[in-house]
Length: 243
Image (tube, rainbow, N blue to C red; front, side, top):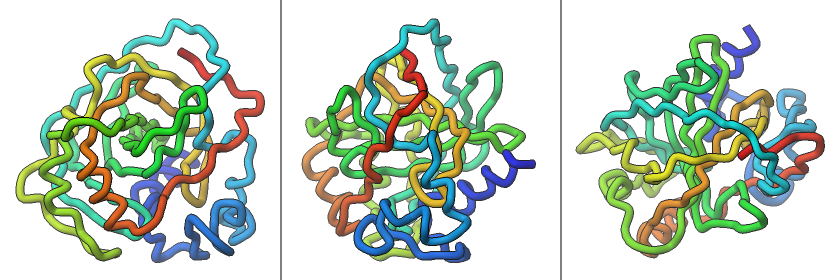
């Protein structure tokens, strides 16, 4: 039951405006990240020991099995919820991790990146959010560098809603597969949602190889949000970062 509740939170509200939640939150000021845990009892996990994002460092060598991606062209809606730009995805895209199928529900973006790798921050990061049949979550994170245009973003970016709360049906399905780097090597750690309620128990799979986005694409994202939307890195504490 706990997993189903967690999935309901992320699918219905994570990285959205949280219209039905108990407290407003933001990325700065009196409702910023350092205040989240005190804004509402619902957000108490934001002060937990296994929070995301983190600075991925001090890696532990492990025999990580390949993630099996089963993606197809299919993002059908783009949303500006005031906290991020999110692309909603219909059923039919999944990953296989630990022998468990996790279905892709949505993906969204943060600029600058939330996670860091050996202290390095990237201009943008995508989070591909998945849930299994019991509501357990797995997030695939992809870092972006500033270089050539990313064709997998081009269609969705041409329809970026400039007003918070506005969604648009995509004229052509978004290419989720195209967002992935050619190399699928990854880091793994146990973490949380990076927005309230910051629920823990999330599998994080961070792609080692970044992909590119153009200067114009990165600027378009920051233009529609008007502010950075990255939670500061959280203490790793006793967790291992596997590679």
